[in-house]
Each structure stands twice: as C-alpha cells, then as structure tokens.
Image (cartoon, rainbow, N blue to C red):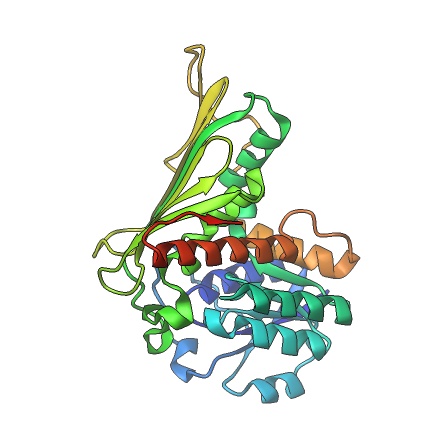
Length: 334
C-alpha cells in the first residue's frame, strides 16, 4: 500500500481527496497528508463548477502549510499536485528529483518547453509521472475511445466538443483571471476537449482558433482542428452565471454518438432505436484515474491510457491555438 500526499487543497483538490479516501477505504493507498499555504482551505469546502461529490467523510490525514515540513515529517511514496497551472512544471520536476512518483493536474504546463523538461526529469529519475487529463477515465469518454478504436460504426465523419462554465471565482488570489498564469479558457478548460480530440484522432495538421475576451483574456474560444473531417472544440467562460456543461456530438458512417444527460447515446443511421452502448458503465473518472496511477506505481507497467508524452503533445496543440487566437483565427500548422 502506497502513502499519498497532496500539495494544494483548493477547488479541484476536493475531487482528488474524495477519490483518495475511497481508494484508502478499499485498502489501495493511505492519504497521509495534505499541504496548502492557506490554512482556511482545510476547513472550507470550495465550491467549483463541477460536483466534487459527497463530503461527509473528511479523512484522517495530517495537514501542513509548509511543504518542507510535510516532506520531512511524513513517509510518502506518491505526490498529487493540485496547485495553480503556472506552478505545475517546476514542482513536478522537483518532486520527481526528490524520489517521489507524481500525479499532476492538467494542464501539464502552460508551455511545451516546460513539458519537455518534465519528460526529461521523468526519464532521468525513473519515476512515474501522470497528468490529470481525466476525461480519459470518465466512462462516457472512455466508451467513446473504444467506439473510435474498434470502428464499429465505420470511420468518423464529424465531431463537436463543448464545455461551458461561468468564470471561476474560487481560485487563490484569482489566479484563473490572470492569462499569464492560467492561459484563459483554452489552457484551463477547453484543454480537456483538445486533448480528447488528439487522444481519439491523433495530432491535427493545423488549428484555427477564434477567441474573445469578455471578462478576462480569451474566456471564449472556438477551435477548428485540422483533420480529414470537421472537428470543432468550443469552450466558454464568458457566460456569467452559466452552469457547467459538457457535451459532444460525433458522426460516423453508420451512426451518430451524442453525450446527453451524462451518458453516450447511439443513434443508428438505419433508423433503429437509440441506445446506450452495452459496455458503458458510469462512475467517477477521478477515482478511475487515481486508481490507475496507483497501479502504475505498484507494477511499473507501461502507461497506455493517459501518457505524459500525449499530455505534452496536447500542450503543443494548445500553444498553436493561442497563436491562432492572437492572429484572429489564422491557421497555425502543427
């Protein structure tokens, strides 16, 4: 059983914590400690744009406001990083170099060159590095991956991914509102769908990104991705008061697959009745993601679902989208 410690206890960390406690109850790990520079974060439930689940079990982990004190005081195998995006790369590298396996939230980093530094540290140290591109583990998207891979409905003919939310207002020192620290909606929220398109279809030949700035820089973005068929990713933080929503519509030669009411639904082209794919099973993607991370740490097997190399390639695509947005939607080749 591995000992896990979390660094950062803000919004998304609450979802991580719930998954860790579930895994601890199953005897797969021990969440021994949490570190955050803001003492009140240990008492406050931070409400974010997604439901982080039941909070009734708080756990028995130790809490720290000093990272060095936590590292010196606890026996730790795995570090789970849930701090602001612009700090991911340096901390992940530091932790791997100190001998810890590392789970780090998305984005891997804000710049591709920092991703390359992280990959270099992973190879030098031999430690496990996994990036929180959690859609790979959400059943409604994992199911979609199988549909694309096995070709049961023929080749894909079109794809639209959408992700909507109000502007995040729960962050430490409002770092989400600083484009240089968060990268706007493209790097923070739309990255999920950009990454999913890459995961399903490979790296596109180009991107064209039209973005607008209502409340903060680039809080709405529409991205056309250069595949052999139309693929569009839409992300929007600019609709004040909007509730979180994610959706997709994928066309295939023999059917259309739509994410609706939290489930993938197949609409056959032959007019047959819509149905949920037989292998679809619901569940918590964060739990599945952290469970897989622990399996990698325990077995040292090859990561085949959510690779850091793939996450780095997603950042290369994201950077191209930012360049396109800066040029008012001009095409940027990859």
